[in-house]
Each structure stands twice: as C-alpha cells, then as structure tokens.
Length: 153
Image (tube, rainbow, N blue to C red):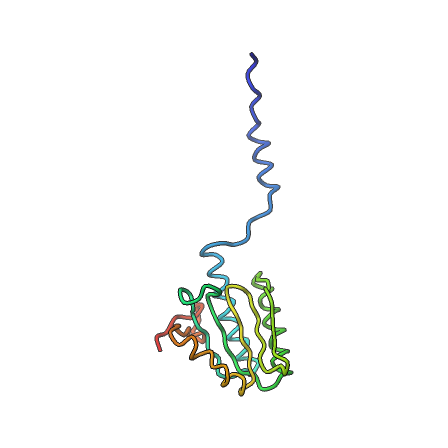
C-alpha cells in the first residue's frame, strides 16, 4: 500500500495567513476598554458636562465592567456629546451595542457592552440616582494620567 501523501508545511502556513485576525481578547481588550472609558470621561469634561463619575463595576455587574455617568446642560448638548463619544469609541475599535433615550431626551444611554455611558439632564440624574444604586462600586480617578487609578471613596 502506498504511503499517504503528506501535507506541505509551507502550504499549511500560507493558509494560516489567510485567516482574519481575531478581535482583541483578554487583557488586551480590557486595556483598550479602560483607556477608552478614561478618555471618554476626559472628553465629556472638555465638552462642559458636569459631575462626572466613573465606576468600576467589575465583579458587581454581569452586564458591564465600567459605568460613566455625566450631567449635560440640555438635550441638544447631550445628543452632541453622545455623537462625539461614539466617534471616540470607533477610534478604539469598539462597536456600540445600542443606545436609548427617554421621550423627553433627559437621559441618553450608550452601551458598548464592556462599558455603559449615561448622559443625564440634572433633574433626571437626581431622580434615577445611579451613584446610589452602584454605591459599592469603586470610583476611578479619571483625571490622573496613565489610564486612571482606582480610588477608594
């Protein structure tokens, strides 16, 4: 019986290069998400949003790792800021899973799976009080360089 033909290793290597590169996973993705959310906080501050709070909910939430909460001055500002956050997410290679807003445009939510951004008008923010809901979550001091450091408060 003749021996079975062996596959040429060079041909096998060529097939590997035809495959698409996998999306970032593990610590690489975690670092990207962390950098994005810190930059998003800085962006919101630069666009005159107020009372920014960045929460690390890893281990507390099954849905997301980070929650960014900010107050805008008007529905127009909130919509404009949301567009700029979406543009920033694209720069980091993050796709928006979805977005929602209430009928009066007093609350807008941007969901990037690993992080969620909540933009409120002042009265809506006081009503929903997400900081109280996530009171056990450590706050991240996003003003520091180097991706922010967790801060016990």
